[in-house]
Length: 516
Image (cartoon, rainbow, N blue to C red; front, side):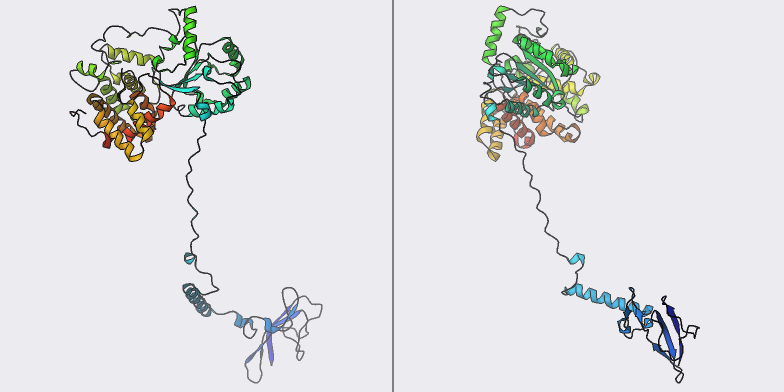
């Protein structure tokens, strides 16, 4: 038998067989310990090549392994490498078996990802309302109150020192929190503060550290839209504080502070009769008047140019009743000011961001009012200021002798909010609007609400939603006979206005010619 094969030398110290030519020495029957013979041998009698298994195989770590441990049914490397056809058939068999196992969910197999049961979805996060801290222990003293709007349509918030209890009874940190919570409702719009200093004494005044903390906590968010801080009845203590705080108070903020020596000086800027001035402050102001009468050249006091004890002129538009306007407008029920301002805003204002929220130039507001009252033509296109038109519309509503929803229905609105809920509240509102509101008021209110619905359609651009508009217009549509607005009454009024805007199609069902 002749041998044909390859002798692989693994670096053994034993010398290779002298036969050379890649053949082992005849009759040796073995190779070196570190050599492996791979190949076949030829049988001389038959001429067929006989397979010769490798001997003395070494694994990867240098240990000998038996031929039976090699791959393949006979240990032959030739049989271990299948041809392409065999590989394809084997692959097809494997795929078929895998598919059957997946379909039958055979135990011990891994199902396809699509067959795996989906894990349960995590529970949807529950929207929890942000808890509102209860400051009823502070609110009961009425230290901070809302007093409607000023003559420019800005919210007025008053702080009365005479209502401060002693420091032992009131936690001043909670007072600071309550003041912040109150201002948060209005700081997105222009607003003013009225500080009644009278009544502050050693028993109730906060310490200096608290004042520093308050100024720093009321950051730009609160100072940006604060248009005026009226300090009423200032004393030497206020002047001392001003000198101490002056280095940390910005020049811009300092210009917003105005000293008011007497209550009469507020009348030019505020609707004084709607301010809920504490009785001790009124008495103190009276004593000051007796000692020192106000000078005619007072910085803050000036007689209104339109003020008069005579009957209003026929062209008067502000501060007169709807009946008066109808008579002097050839029977037209809709006031001229409302028609012209809404017509201009419909074309140039409904997409303006912050419309009805931003205040206008105070001087221009007075000038336009005077033009209307004198019967002159107001060309809104030439004026070109949507915020001015919005301010004039709000001012017109606020200066009416009686609110559009009438004094008579004020208590009814409060009752609806306090005693009813849900559907009953809506039905009672419907009865009030369509059954109890005077015809002329109904016509004008419906005209206004219809226009505000157009404004709401552009809320993405102007940022004035129904809720925002209800906050702006609520105090201009209803107030009590004493003119004093409070935080307690403002909520029901704004909610009532919001209901008018959200359900106007269901509430305004009366024909214009139908009397209640």
